[in-house]
Image 1 (cartoon, rainbow, N blue to C red):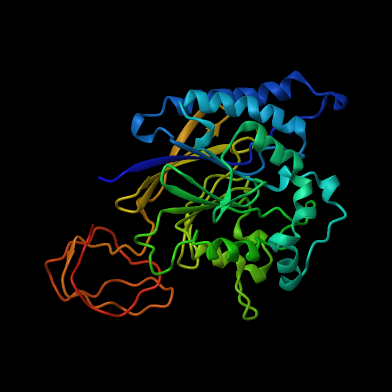
Image 2 (cartoon, rainbow, N blue to C red):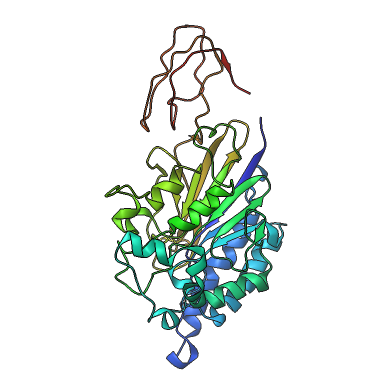
Length: 379
């Protein structure tokens, strides 16, 4: 059995969602939050050893209005969680969400309506004005002491995009909230293709021919696919699609934003598995949830446990998903001789075997398949 890494995935915690004192805040609203989030720490810390989290990943909306007061609350709770799990702040990885920017600061910034304009704005050299609305979020990350991001060997001065490695897992952090302005953002967002091209140029993305051997790579960004402009996932021109670009070059996507019940992971554009988190806290009336994803670096597969909070009984309940989730073009065979490959362009393909002495470990092959033959054995 290979090395197993458990990743606790939280999203949409919304510190600061309660009314402020000037809005006649009540003790009830604070109690409702604490009645869910404080027991959550105890629940996770008591999970059986084989599922105990070793990395904490939070996919955005840590705050509510992108203000310092939001993050002052977040720091207190996160430090309790980290300590309860006997982890350190270097085991924490975050991305920003639409509630992590100060919208008053962003209101006069342009929202592009086409790919060319979006790519111009999101080039690394043009980002300073669009980083500014995330000032409180970046300050929070600095004060909390989380890992710095890198692109190549260059340390980044912000916590919105970049690369970080934790316990042998490579994380690609992106910001899907650059152009969030209100309740009509759906279909208008851009992920940042220019940033992805630089990240790939520095060797941080998975080589599409090396899915079975490159480091397990996980990308964090807040919004699901349907929130992006269609040019990020449909090829209208010869431009690369930003969403497809990252999904095809990593093993797992973690995102959030969806205030709904737990959903099954999906495999998008025949690339990464997309694990969408619900909301860890958005009020007592929502289906608050979290999930733990167990990565096996030897079999290059993932298992998942998802949990939802039942406010009727003040209890976290586990829901089981399909398992395992194969992460790569690793051949799902134990001992195979003289295999003929099916040529495939992004579609799932089953092995055509010329030898009956074959044991299948897990079904289809994923990713780009090339024609050829030979003796293949699992590592």
